[in-house]
Image: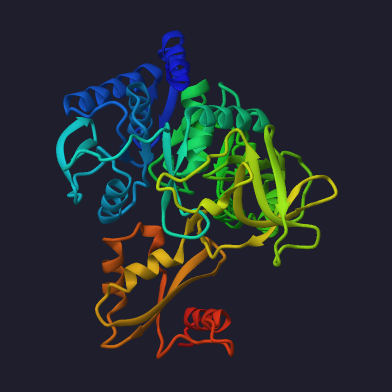
Amino acid sequence: MPSAIVEAFRRIERDHPDRPLIYLPAAARVTTAAELAGLSATIRAGLEAAGIAPGSLIGAALGNRPAAIAAFLACAERGHPFLPIDGGTATEEISHIGRQLNAAALMLSTPASVSGFQTRQVVAGHVMLAVADEPPSGPAHNAAVLKLTSGTTGLPRATLTSEAALVLDTRTLMDAMGIGADDIQIAAIPLSHAYGFGNLLVPLLLQGTGIVMREAFVPQRLPEDARAVGARVFPGVPFMFDFFAKHLPPDGWPATLTTLLSAGARLPRPTVDRFREAFGLKIHSFYGTTETGGICFDGGDDVVAEGTVGRPLESVSISLLPHDDAPFGGGRVLVRGRGVVTSYADGTDPDVFVDGGFLTGDLGAFDSEGRLVLSGRVSPFVNVAGRKVQPGEVEQVLRNIEGVADVRVMGVADGRRGEHLVAFLVMRTARPTVVDLRRFCATRLASYKIPRQFIFLDEIPLTARGKIDRAALDAAARAASTGML
């Protein structure tokens, strides 16, 4: 069956080959529809020349570059399930993900030795193809995209997302947010994450919505980038908006950049208030998960209570299941809809795919206007600048350091990034230096998963009931950050 996304892009390329789709201010160049199609064709030819069978999984750690979009397009054309991986992911983690999910090949942006894969060739520009040492075993993944997530309880796994779900989610979001083909969006969030994939990459291919893109969030350049191309939409995460509310751009806020979207973590009310006072604009909360796509959107202009994420999107229904920690009249959020996936690629966590929907780790209630207000989470995720980190994954890495007797990782409040990670270590032997700890983590974890603080303790504090005393750990982290330890 032909790909709906490929067919939509081919119409754009045919009717408007010179249409600018990707603005690259750092390189002072633009990628047109015809150029993106040409890059996709080159990548597709490279896959064919390497003998990669259609239908096999392809992973891609390409960062925020045109090649990431072209790679997805090439895979859609050849029928490859596509696995986007964060560009800053350590090679050891890329290897683990690729082997765990039976990837036939990986596309990388820089030369790297990835265990279990052999680099064969440069297929296009900065895109290097690494082919699996052993052919993938087991059945092919029945999905267009495998989106990486930590689910609700454990280490990273991948959802099986169909193209139909991708298209439905994108069209629903673009309609609710009022984003059209002639708009230009700021691509400051990673294309590899579900948020960036659904709000930036797919709209570009499906309806020709352009993006202005740098390889990382550069706040000092963002306002001038928006002015240069007339960008109207800025999908971001809370710490980005908080930065601008605290550091006003010298030339003011770009006049065209009026649709501001925040997702990935709770948007603090003080940030909303400061931003509105400074620029006269409201930041709109968007709530979604990797497993469901978009769930709610706060599209109104009125100021709402913190944690309010808006009304359910079209074709989405929400039920609140009873939970001890939920607010009065609320519960744990269960999401149903045509965009909700039905399983993870490895078949784990069956308890969250229940009653024809996905049981999130979020707690909340509806207000008098029918808007969902989130009050907390069931699971112990840490939100680092809008990216969810499972502390258990970081703890597993740190336990491999020689001499570590015990370790706990937790998040503490951070005014700029929402939260940051703190690692508490109990040593059997001499304490390693912080530099050595960070070097060890850097080869095994993505940069945002590396703890900002390392605190050495004689023992991990416990409560009278024998549970980890998180209050004591939080106090230790705050004392350390103020130089008291």
